[in-house]
Image 1 (tube, rainbow, N blue to C red):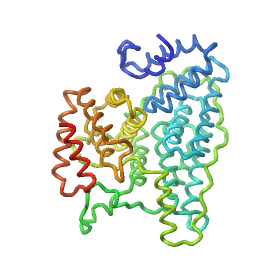
Image 2: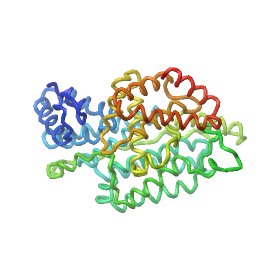
Image 3: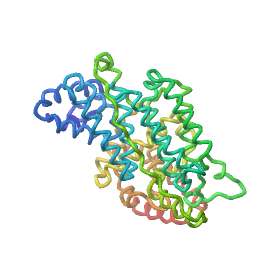
Image 4: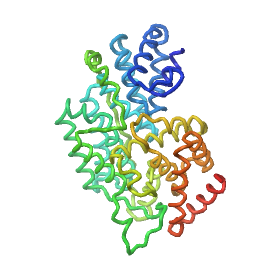
Length: 418
């Protein structure tokens, strides 16, 4: 079995691993194979691990654990992994590649859990992002039109915490507390984001229903606070490094090189509504919202999922849709095989429909989501078709409230599906 196939398929229930679901066994098998190859394929192995972490981000904990184990046997292997991650992150920041920034931040957090990256280095990274965000929304010294970028940076920090919150609280409690206080301060000075124009459902202004709703960042902050109060227990994030803790602890931890966020654009010379609006629009195009939740199912269909687990599974699903755009069968296979211990068919349907109906336009062509829904029905014939039927009923019940563009998309999708 080639080391490449083992690396790509780690964490999957697949032929390469004898169809077993034992993560510890997967890591041991892959690790021993990589160890045999490392002397003559070191650079290739390192390059593929970092590439896999970037393009199969739901499996980041497995790749970080492998780096931690190889760190014990091969000098400088992990040091090079940290340097490559830092260079890639700086490159992603300079080119404003949101997906790459977010995923490399997650990989850095997982490397910290595997004793490869110093916890203090990760905190410095968080504080660099937080400082840039706070400067941006400051009325006097910043450029509040670019709040979408500032919000994105803070979202990146918050979305790392389910992956490494436990370790950070244990190892650098004061520093991580300082970050949390900084985030709270940021939330107090930013403007609440209310974009009625992008709402899939039209609400009656008098009901005020959508005006009072938390925006995406406020909602994520609440989920993280609940997670913190629950002792950072997350079901949907695999923690394979714990099985190897006794070995990993003897590895050398490295520091991250300095990272700099790009300079914020100058505020418009005339602070007119039009000039500021143009800059805000440009910022929103570069740092768009990934998800607008539809909430089409009754709460009891999703009530067993913790608030933070819902966010994490949505991220997994969106990443699979992103990286397998063009490989619909692989996309469906990965979507139904996420490393989570609970069922999530309703959440999966809601996430796919939220992308199909995303305003102003879906990220990919609507045909892609149509084909993925069909493949999911084939992959889970006993469960998913009934969930899709329930989604159709829920959306058709609300069709009078549905935005006209979304109504047309829904009708075209359903015609094709039938």
